[in-house]
Image (tube, rainbow, N blue to C red; front, side, top):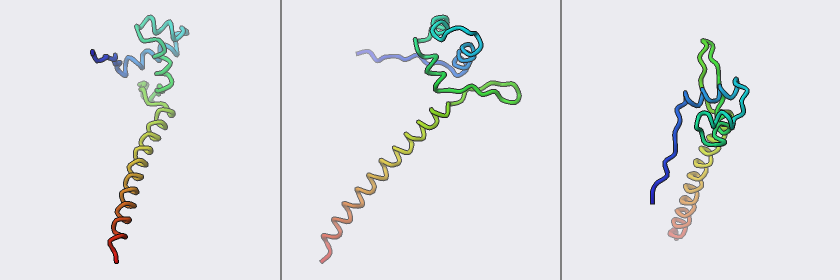
Length: 102
């Protein structure tokens, strides 16, 4: 079976597309058609990223607060899973050692 290839877009492309959405007055669907982007992708980018303007006039694309919070939740869940596994191992070890004592 053939593996599915997903298109990847550069940060610069995303930034320009989001800037076009903000300034052009066109709908997201119209901009997506013009740029050849998958339907709904531009609105996902708008939710995932925020466009920040620096003091020197440059514009950069950074993860939105929601995306950062979701990444932090994922990181904390992974740490919790590891801590729970370690706790379970220690419980089993304590059980084994407590049976060995006379």
